[in-house]
Amino acid sequence: MPEDPTPKFPSFPKIDRRELHRNEEHFKHVFRDQIAEAAGIIEVLISLVVLVALIIATIPLLGWLPGLFVEGNGYDIEEFLSHALAIVIGVEFIKMLAKHSPGSSLEVLLYAIARHMVVGHNSAAENLISMAAIALIFVIRKFWFIPSFGSSAEKKGEGHDQTPPEEDDPEFTYC
Image (tube, rainbow, N blue to C red; front, top):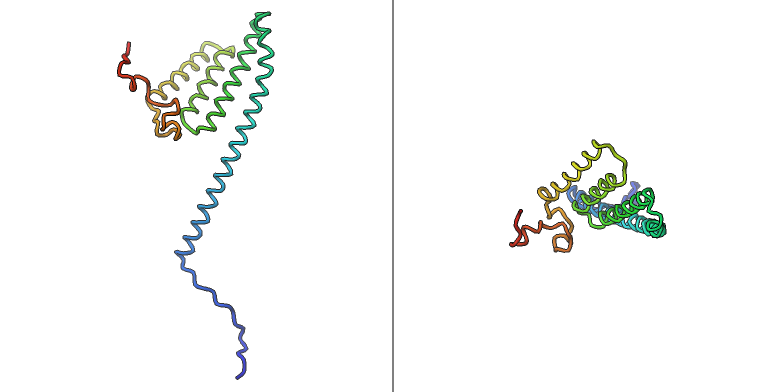
C-alpha cells in the first residue's frame, strides 16, 4: 500500500483554557513571591550598609566627647548634638526597615522633627509647626494607632507599640 503523501504532525494534547489560566496564575504567583523575596534581601542589605555607615559615623562622635568638657564651646555642643541625633535617626530608620510597623515609622518622623527643632536655628513659626507635628504624632499613636497593623513581634508583646499603660494598669489614674 502506498504511503500517504501528507506529512504527519505530532498530535498535542488539547489544553483547556481553564487549565491554561490556572497554570498562568500559578507561575505569576511564584514569580511575585520570588520578586518579593529578592526585594526583602535587598532591603536587608541596604539596612546592613546603613548600619556600617552609622558605626563609622560614631567614631568621630566619640572623638569629640573629650573636647566638650574642656572647651565648653556652644558651637561644639551644637555640632555634637547634630551628629548624635543624625545617628539616632539612622538607627530608628534601620529599626523601621526591620520591623515594618507603623509605630516604627512614627518614631522615625518623631526623631527627625525633634532633631530639626533641637539643632536648627528656626523661627518661632517653624518651631510652632514642629511642635504641632510632634503633638499630631502623639495623637496618632494614642488614638488612631491600631496594633493589628504592627508586626508579629508587637502582637506577641515584644514590641513597644502596645496599648497605653493606663489600659494595662488598673491602679493608673489620670491627674
